[in-house]
Image (tube, rainbow, N blue to C red):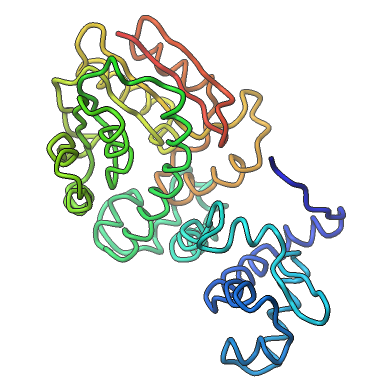
Length: 346
C-alpha cells in the first residue's frame, strides 16, 4: 500500500522549480553509495559521512542537507539514517530498487528534455540531436552506442519485469502454442512465459543488435530451445508468421495512434483465424488528466523516443485494436502499475 509524504504547497512548487537539483542530489547519493553506507553502519554523523564518502566535510554537509530536506534521510540521535522510502526503493536489496530508472534518466533522458518546448513547436523529437547514431528514433540511435543501449534495456527489463509479474497472474497462456513478442528487447517476457508454460514456443522480434545480446542470456537449455530470436524492424519488415498470438507489450506508448493502428493491422494479417493480439501497456486515464506517472513520462516520447508517442489511454488502445480489424475485443483496466490490457480476437 502506498504511503504519503507530507509536503506543503510552497515546497511542492520548490520541487517543481528546483526539480533538476533534487534529482542530482538523489543521483549523487546513489553514486557515492551513501544510502547503503548509512544502512550498513546503522547511521553516520557528518564527520563519519565525509570519511565514508572520501570527501571533505563541507560537500558532505551540502549533500546531507539536501537529502534530508527531500525527506530521504533523517537525523536520529545525532546520526543520519535512511528514511523508510529509501529502504524500500533505493537499496539494491529493497522491495523495488529504482537504480535502473535513475540511470536512464541521468544518462539518456535529462539532457534531451531541454528541447521539450522546441519539440512541441516542431511536433517532433528535437532532443534526439543530443545523441550520436543513425536514424530518427531513440531506438535506432542506441544501436551506435552499446553502453547507452545497455542502460536503456536494463531499465526497460527491470520496469517490464515488475509489470509482467502481475500480467502472468492475470492472463492464462495455456491455450496458446506459439507467441511472437514484438519489440521483445532482452527477451525477459518471453523467457518468463517459456518457463511458466513448458509447451509454449516464443519468438522475440526486435532489432538485430538487441536480439543478438538477448540470446546469450538464456541459461536453461529447455527454455533456449523454445525461445527464438527473429531480427527485424517492426515498422518496415513483415512480422513472423506461424504463431497463434502476438504480444504488443510496452510498444503502444511509443507511436502515434495512427501508427499503432497500422502496426496492429500487421498483427492481424500475420495471425491465423482465431489468433489473438494482446496489447499491454502503461496508460493514462480516459479523461486525459492523469496519473502523475503518465504525465511525467509522456514528454520523453515527444522530445526523444519517437516524436509521436505518449502515455495513451486504455480507450485509445481499444479503439486501435477494433480499427485494426479484430472482431471481438476485451478491455481490462486498473491492473496495477498504471497498466491496462486489451485483447483482440481475429
